[in-house]
Length: 140
Image (tube, rainbow, N blue to C red; front, side, top):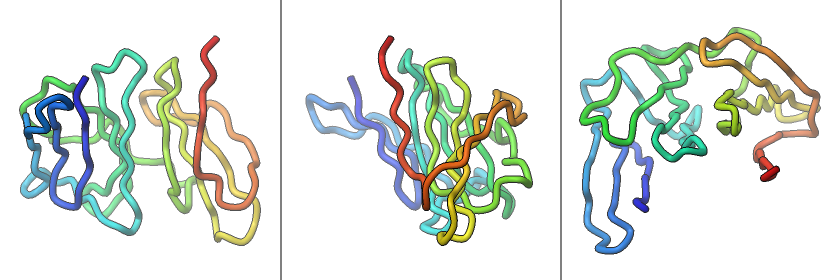
């Protein structure tokens, strides 16, 4: 029932009813860099208890997993993105908690959508249109 926001300096949780900040996990000193390029992205798992953040870590692109009850950011990423992924454009968490990453490549040719397991191993990939960005999972 809360709203999570990603800013350039923190991951912030706001109470949806009172609109008050409940918690603010600041990036400063954490090793995580949220920036406009490559753009950071945030998603939540279906259970609503884990956040996944795509951001930079020590100048490398990485995926971080953060529990909604955590009081600090993780010191290490879940994994760094594989070298096959060139231009991170967006990400989403599947109902099975695999990580879906959209790769825009050079923004001129068809991009690639990668599915990775929780360790960062590519388990599927699909050619998509130019600049694949949004992922939608249907309820089955």
